[in-house]
Amino acid sequence: MSLMSQTPMPELTLNELVARSGLAVRTIRFYTGRGMLPAPIRRGRSAYYTADHLARLELVRELQAHGFTLAAIESYLARIPQDASPETIALHRTLLAPWMPDLPEILALPQLEERAGRSLSQDDLDTLQALGIVQPEGDRYHVAVAHLSVAVSILDLGLPKSAAVAAQAIFTAHGRAIADELTEVFRTLVWPVYKQADVPADQLRETVERFKPLTIAALVTAYETAVNETKREAAARRTSDDADGITTA
Image (cartoon, rainbow, N blue to C red; front, side, top):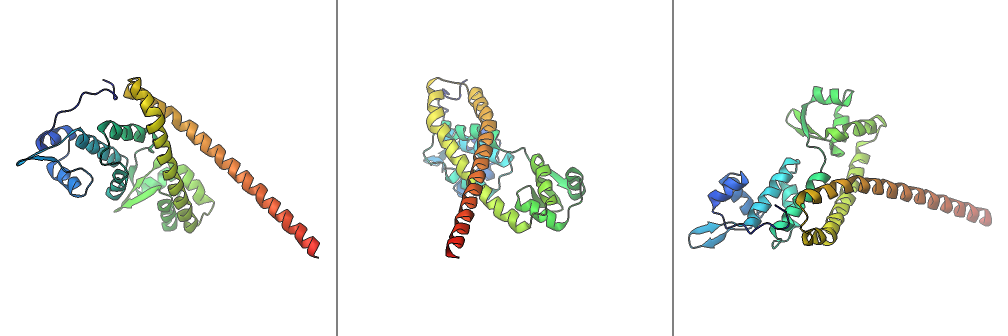
């Protein structure tokens, strides 16, 4: 069955939504109370749910699986219009998975140090947390192991925690902007074409997965180009300042 041509789902009772979503009644009511899920349709004393409710719950579970906090999930859902169709919400799930990092592993400190290949001081752990690589939970850590080796190499350079915090803020701000704009590109330029062609969801997912390394390469190239331009501009300013100093002298 194509993602683009699913038949409308009949309305569901709360018990049917629980069965379809795999979430408990109290969880669904909690999400509704937080505004993460639209209120059900009321007919007399009965409440009914639609494909929109199920799609949003599936998106919530996808976000949870990738380590999103409740606040982050609420923020993500707040950017999706209330009148978004189930297909549009499904698109968010399709685009989300290939772009998310590997699921975090939960490690005790000795395990974390073994994976890092070195001992980690409290300052090291604080810096790794500022970089978004580790997140403490009790006496264990949620670790983005795919990025741990790069982060440890940054520690070896003696990066101050304040610099890590500032850098992470830049990465987060610009990374979110890039993600939002690329999602909009797929929504407005790719989705309509695939929908009209009745392309299966697997093919759309493959397109996104293949696009990811190209995007990363493009970002690296753009960054290197910008750094070189900044160096040239700085050199030009120094030359101009030196010339002005000679003239003044």
